Length: 247
Image 1: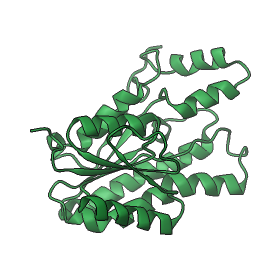
Image 2: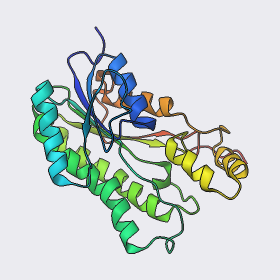
Image 3: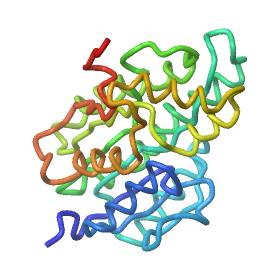
């Protein structure tokens, strides 16, 4: 029997990058997976795509209701959807601050809130949030993004405390700089993409970017029965950025 047999998972931002890798792995391990994303044209084969903007409460509530209508349950929620931001604390105007926090923090809360009644009914309930290494260490020109992911780290721990007695485990993965579409766009926008890429790789002790598949394996582990006693954990998948000093 596969570890996610008879499990229904919801993955936000599952049409690309880490979300798509997570969806593919969950499917391979027996889960039925609903992907919530603004566009579902590229969702992994075998998943069910639901168009959803997580900054819109009405769309979120309708999407979760549609998942339950189709599959009858929700057991696992992967809050992966998020957007990036570059610059120091003065680089982004108020509208951009509100936009990034609305997606990365409030959006996570919206989806979790909508899914909670269904997770409470599950015997294998788990929430896994996608955080970032910038929540733990200072990285240049990531002030807004770091603020949002610092909030995700704190929210993960608070949710774990709130829902542990209900049988809902809440954890987060903390990736380093990952080989994702957002990082690729960041490189292409740089004055010297090749030099910027070398810098991103060099600041991780392993000397390379983290792969989407590596992060996906950590997410799926935290959601799995193998992690049944794990809650309130922030699992680093960061090439050693937070724990290793090599110079």
